[in-house]
Amino acid sequence: MHRSFLHTCCLYAAVLLIAVVTLAPLAWLVIMSVMSPRELLAVPLNWLPEHWDWSRYAQLLGMNGDIADNLFLHALRNSLIAASGSAFIALLTGIPAAYAFSRRNGPRAILFLMLATFMMPPITYILPLYTMFSGLGMLNSPFTLIAVYCTMVLPFATWLMKSNLDVLPVEVEHAAVVEGAGTLRTLWSVVLPMAKPALVATAMLSFLLAWDEFFYSLILNSDLRGKTLPVAIADFAAGRVTDYGLIAAVGVLASLPPTLLAVFFQKHLVHGLAAGGVKG
Image (spheres, rainbow, N blue to C red):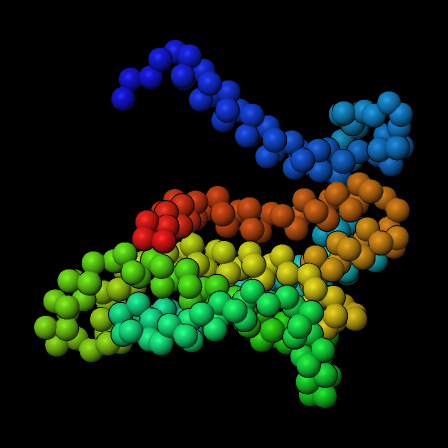
């Protein structure tokens, strides 16, 4: 379709405006992380540092032997374990559940019940969960967070996968059944290859859902053994550290894993989300 010059200019201007609004906070976070404390508090504000100071990143990554490296690296490890574990379990159990609801006429009441549990605020469950895990001696562990995060990630993964399976052609599965394939063989060899973009999108969004979770991690962990990055960042900002540049450096490092995953799987992520939205 031919676009007029004015239409093209407006289109590029809108894209530029969205890019600036989206990237400006991240750019300022990076600049803050390499500014000296004096420049961060200067009036008027300096928009660029006189000297780029990368020492905070070395401190957080354990290269300077500062005590702050223990908090960040422990929290990073716990976040990776909790988010990866809960996303993996959600996919492992959510895919068969989504297939049952989409192709085997699973009770829709159960499907909506799962959605209701996902919509409930975390404060509803925290007291019984805390009492149970405290009685079992399972507080302050990232593996406890995996079990808790599955309660919110699994319904989300099931709904997202079901939406994507609904739009796949069922005739291909019927052909596989005619050839003698059972349900598991049909799911593994026919459905999952066609739903690969949906799998990637579901895995990515499930990982991000668990990666950003704050409330459960705050209540169920009181020391470094299970504390995750969102809680660690709150600790940095709550007065333990007065260097705002160090807090900004923590934010930059914490945003890298999900950003790299999103960039690496961008094609599958967009395709998976768009496919699920066709049928709604």
